[in-house]
Image (cartoon, rainbow, N blue to C red):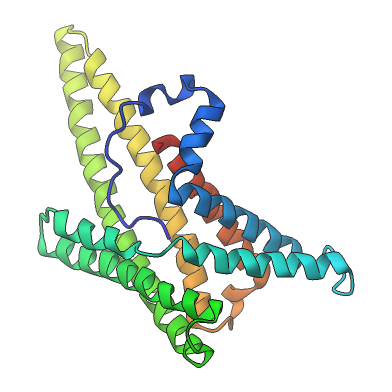
Length: 253
């Protein structure tokens, strides 16, 4: 799951990431929990796409090995969620709310995502054999509902953020028009416009990621039933989400 709406703190190295040595950048990326998790996510959903496309017959040993690999990676990824719910608790504690609507969306987003990560710890323990597997089905259903609800709140928050960016962009454009009318230089304002466009693009990508993950959560809630639960569609949504998240994490590290 993508982080609901919190912005990564400004990294002084971010502005020069294009000039960084690739291997040093890769080391920094893989040192982060989310970095390794997204590599595993890409591996898992790429494998699921291969399996869903029936590229290899089920009788082929490679098909069984790919299925075993996909299942193993799925369980491994859950270990990376240990304690991750704390980030949502802190996000709520540190949030500044401008309206009641934002309070509601934040509670839904961070509350849903936090509950999802919290329950996922027990799902991992059940799949690992430490907790009786009879509780697994109930835990997975609670986890899926919490995840879906969290994405509803997250998308709501990000749409509000996009509106703010649009308002800021309109103000800066108005300043540029005034400066041009006076014959003044407006290099600073143009730089602000570029930054706002970058923020807007990244926020839109984040919404696409939430929609893809939300689609998978909806399929889990519906137990894989319905038109929007086809294996190839779910696998493609998972891979799209993983690639977007990898791109965001790469830029931020």
